[in-house]
Length: 372
Image (cartoon, rainbow, N blue to C red; front, side, top):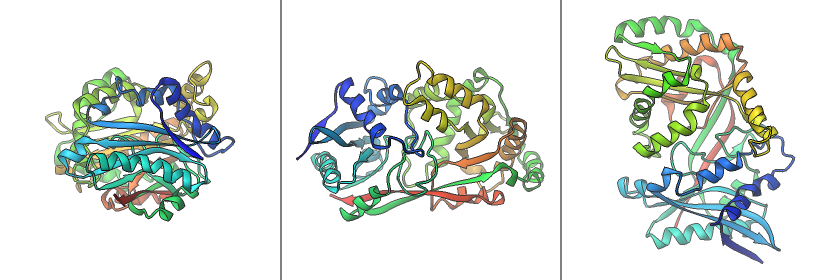
């Protein structure tokens, strides 16, 4: 018999977070989160996402053992401002038993119907900076700290339950040796002169901080036209600033500004923490933080986390300035491989940015949708 229980206490939420640790035990491609970090993400008093969203966390039990988990989420900004009557689900993990999947999803349907919503979509988090999508290709590729990994049967469960693919995402990689500066050096010089633009590089986090609010404003403007986008609030900006910016190597944050010091483009790259997180096994102490620190300083794999260009400067080759700056930084650091985080398959503009580097799609993922 399958029973579903809502996780409310710290102990219950810890069980919720730890379930994938057993589900993917000895799986060399799954990357565990830091347990304390996940607990903070689910803490309504700490995560500002709960100002505009509500979420409930459910655990499935069978024969007194945990066999699945799911989060049922409503992003009220999406529902009220964009008029998308959607209930989300995320942080979904399950054994290969479709009855467990069905029982977990029923809790999501209950929340949706209770609030007169008309469809369910997932897996996805609270906002656009959370993880997204079920992996459908690339099961033999190591995950990243900013993506979910899953078994192949997940997608099969959704298809059997009448879901259809809603959004498709691609993840690509290319060796740094594919980056030939002649493809952007000339454009870099031309664009800087034509539009009176200049790059901003940083050596310390303290230098970055005064520009971060402008960066998030530009992020909202850059992605506003995408159908799946929900803007980041001012409170969330502060939260992400404190949580993530100090964690990122300042030399991997690049801005482009105009003559009036307005930021017109930005990019954030992070070293790969995948192997360090696997060694940490979900804990920062006693040695987890040392593995992460080593990866931060020594990793030769880089992940392009975010890139954005102001709408007025899109299609004007402004990214040539960013790529030129990264080329010199990466060459100095001895970078070997470059990876891209999930990007919408139909976002042709972003895919076109990378064409000269001959990227290879090595993972595909999607969200699934079903009408209530």
